[in-house]
Length: 435
Image (tube, rainbow, N blue to C red; front, side):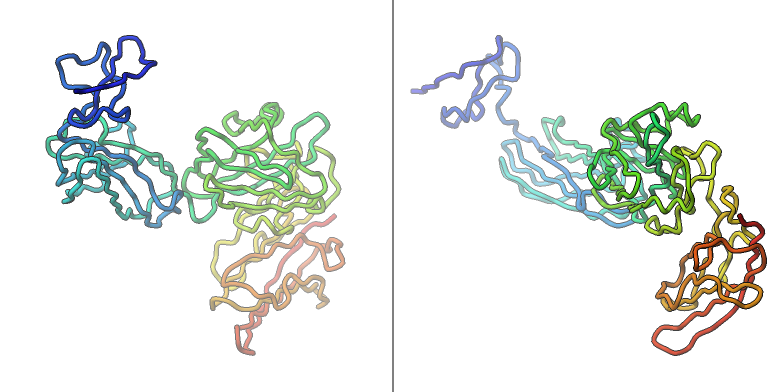
């Protein structure tokens, strides 16, 4: 005799069905029919198929792979049918057109694996994927077996973010003391060669951490975006609208000092600026931004920041007014620009000394002398350095005063590591205008 206590709460027109016909009548072996009006005289909609391979889940490790570094792909499978599964055909693909199909040009890997998965059995497999370029991808897996009676549970696609290992997105300009009634903001710049998705990225100061965008936002290579809570700055500075991201809970920036941090979606630190109002280098009116001199020089160096020299007081969404090109030649020391004019007009106000040592590490001394042989400034004094780097000079001497117009001699000494040997040479630099 068969006894079953049917469940309550079915939607009208949906019957109770037994799952395993030869099993007992416990509540776990019954459920609501998947078919309206049930399946009288037919196979129950909840009954197991003879052959039914189910792709249960796929994931990767690490969750946010860096660019051009191999990572692991994992997939788990369940035998949702009655017969043993002996073979699985795998197709791994990148769903570029997002049609949930492995088109021929999207397939990157195919394999047939011998297995032995019994009813309700579980198996996990993994593969190594070669490194990818920075960007957003849709990674898909299609799993098939001969005679599968249900192909609706054989495919899954997940989003995949490949992060640049070089931290190409930087904090490039900061408006922490705007004109009364105007908004504070932070400008980001993508100095890399690849577009970057800022979705799920974070910006933080000493008090608050907020998400830049919950939705995907693509910052194109060599382009800018401005973060803030007031879109009126678009018209105020005649910006392009798509160069602005509205953040309702944008942090309140301190006028004296603050600690700004930029995090990627994996919570990896991308850039950090511990600015101070003295980094402006001169007295300025409210509405003057703090600009970065060069994107490739550390954001933690005060020497790489100064007040904007633009007539509007800032340059959101475009090249900074105090930007100067770095030297391109690869000799021991290059100077750019030469001559330079540290007069605060935004044109050639700073000079970059770029050095390249003939060995991996060493010690460097860079001193500046006037035409009478008097030392006026020490840029570096037996400073431990790597093979390549930069120093910036704003034209001030060791007393903090601007140097006079004229020709200056740059004395460079390079000390080899672990020895007493050093080499010395001189270069000239012309200061054509001062205050």
